[in-house]
Image (tube, rainbow, N blue to C red; front, top):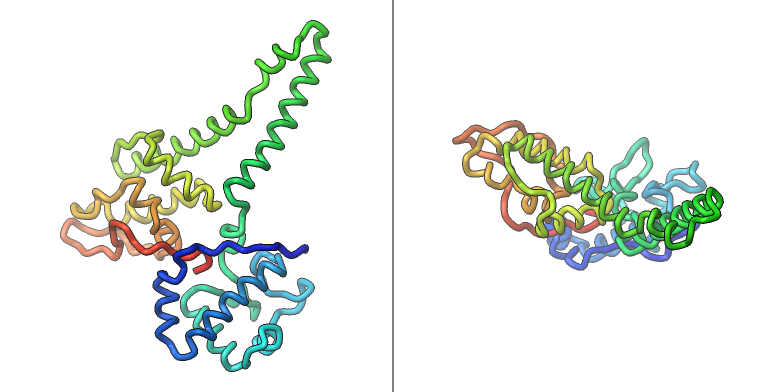
Length: 263
């Protein structure tokens, strides 16, 4: 596959807990450099975050040491650290970066451009069909019949907002409106990152199970908390079970440090 020319990195990556922990370790600078070399190499390979040569041979720590021009022992220390923190997974001796595709999807602008091209092609096809069907059909009439890109995109987004918020209201017994500016903004932010409807439902299920019977935490079953900066952490966290009124919950509320795209 052709290599990509860029990778996504959040500007607050050095505020992330895992990077902060790495910075407190011996050889911290070398480990962090290796992390960015690993991300850049994954982008260059463009193989869904799976480190295979020609899709057959797994890259070893010795091979990475040669490619990254680093001591093999430092490479091994870095890989152990990344695996411990969940930044990589080693599956059948193959190094992988979890959720690489989710984070490397086209950004919102590129997605919109791609949708524009598809919608415009469909619109022209509809117009041609109408003209062929009736010689009396004017271009104005065909334009009225054809659905604009903006209308289609708005309908798609509205359906997603409604589905997510209705699911939350059903599970948590809440009455949030799906089209408020704040709710649309926080959901759109996660959608632009490549998250799907099922990801939102998974987070709702997990946090309802943990918080719904806890008087202090139940009030945080709301869109801006569930789908905010901790969304990916909630999505990837293990299910901890239901908390009682006086029980303790492992979930935190309020704002939290943003998680780096690849951490």
